[in-house]
Image (cartoon, rainbow over all chains, first blue to last red; front, side):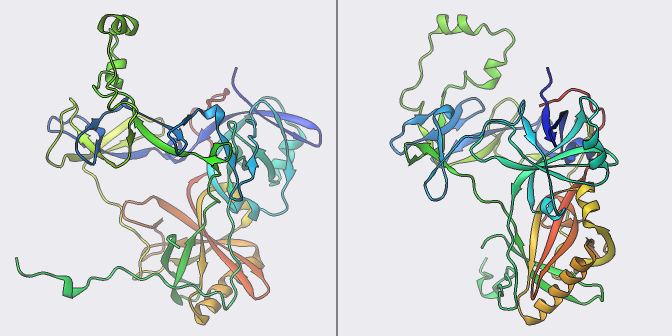
Length: 199
Length: 241
C-alpha cells in the first residue's frame, strides 16, 4: 500500500500520495563519466594515503563510534543540542495526521532551506482545503520523512500545476544597519615575485 | 566566514556596486552519541581480498551459503575493522585495473525519465558572477506570494553593504521591493538574460531579489531557484517513496 501524507485543517483530514521531484526529474541531467582506454566507464576506489590498500566498492563500512572505538547501532544513538541537553527522537510523519497552520506571510517559505520537494496527489476530494490552496493560501506543518532528532519544517501550497509540499530547515538572516559593515572578500591575486623564470 | 562572495550588482538606474553575498545555511545537525559522550562518524574496512565486493555479491551464479561452507574464508584480522583515516578517491578501469594516465571524460545527457539521450565531449559552464559584468536589475517583478508558489528555492544569499554608499544602494533596493511586496528577477551576462552561475560548472539558477525593511535596517535577499514547481511527467497515483 502506498504511503500517504495526512494532514488536517479545522478538524477535517485529507490524505495525499506523494512523489519526490527535483531538477533531474523535470528537466533531465548531465553527468561526466571518466572512461578507460576501451571506452568503458571507470570505477571508483579508495586508496589509503600510505598506498598500502586499494579499497573497492563493498570493502568498507561506516558508522558512529565512541572515542574508545565502541560501535553504536543507529537504534542506540542519542542526540544532544549545542548546550548538551538531550533531544527526543521525533517519529516519522508518514501515517500520522499533521495539523495545518495557515501562514501569515509567504516570506516564511523563503526562509526555508529546501531539502525536498514533493508533488502531491489527493487520495479523495479534499474539499475546503483544495479551495483555500487554490486561492493562494499556504500552510505550515511539521514533516519528518523518517524518525529523526531534527524534525524539518514544511509548507503545503498549490499552483496551476498541482499541490506541492516543500520540506527543509529554516535559515536566519541578519538585519543590516548602517554600522553593520562587512569586509569585501578579495579576489585571488597573482604575485609577480613568485613567478620563476629559471627553468 | 567562509560563505562570503563578491557580488557585482546593478540597480534600476543602472548604477552598479560590488557588495558581499553571505550564504544562508541552517543550523548544524545535532551531535549524536551515547550517555552524554559524543560519537564520531567514521569509515572502516570490512573486507580486504575483494571477494566480498559488489561484483562478487552480484554474481548470478553465486550460492553464497555454499561458498561460505566450502571455501571457509577468513577475514584478515590485521586489517578488517581498521579505520580509514587518510585516503583519496582513485579511478580504476572497468576491469578493475589501476590506470596510470588521466582518463578521457565523456558527458552523458539523460532525459527526465533517466534514459540516456546522447554522449558528447564535456563543455564547461562558465560562471556569470564576476566583477566585470554586474547582475542586472531586469525590472521584471512578481508578487512574493506568486513567486513562492511557482519556483523552488534551493539556496539563498543575503546581500550586505561594505560602506555607507553601498548601504544606501542596497537599502533603496530593499525598500522598493518591500513597499511593493514584490520580488525582482536578477539577470546575468551582458544582456541580463542569462542564469546565475556562481562558479565554473556550477548549477545555473534564476535569482530573485526580495527586500525587507525595519526602520533604518534592511534585509536584501537573493533567492536562487533551479526548478519550477510543476508536475513531473508520468506521475502515478501511488507514492514512490
